[in-house]
Image (cartoon, rainbow, N blue to C red; front, side):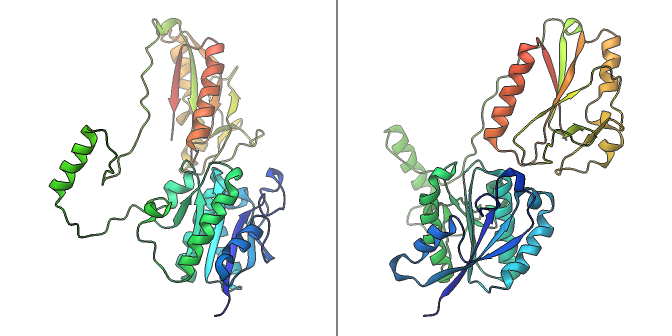
Length: 352
């Protein structure tokens, strides 16, 4: 039996180039296994399998996030030179930019090279929602402390994919469901299965629903301020408003941070002082007039007319594209705490 050739994809951190300061690293190849790929190599050979990681592709997270389609094509050309039978990406855990890159690389390699590809992520990684219908994504914990477990899972699935096996029911195999439905024959009718599930539910016994039901947080609406004409009002946006030149270094998506934009002494947002940095929508119209995103000109007028008491002189801004739920909750809590401490009584949230 000939050796099965594997190519592994990693970001700059796991590829041992460096941390966030090297997130702009270009796509590059290393011969053999690198970093976590060494354990993956050992696991792929478990049971006497003849598998070899012939090369590792490494790319900086920022490089990929800024030009995902273009960089994915570059990576395909690098991978093509090594003629692999399967590609493994990650695991990415809860790293949003890394997850998006792993998903895009797998999807593009499958489409362009016709070989199977697999990655692994935490359920809150935005890459899951973006690629689960096109790429087999194994479930992981939320951080690299689950690395060994994740690599064992990836190795076992990669061996099956390289052997030509189709993973028909991903959820049963510890992966994210693809969302595709297939006709199957069942011994019982739908009515009988439904009654059986109901009886189990009433008796407190375990049962498994046959449909996927989304779960959403219930958010109670806040009460309006008693008198808006005396209230301190703030503006928060996820549309990517930044000070001209982006001195705070906010990413255009998959971000983990917010910026505080001062509007003190400003009657409107001038294009010479403010701009928008966001990869999730066409920003040309907002960059032509940032007041279309944050209507400072209209709010100053309302302030002068006494409709609102006073405008808070800081706008909190972030780029909502692909943000993980954990980061969104953390940033939302941080912003709310700072506004509360400042005595803000009402907030206007503007979005894309």
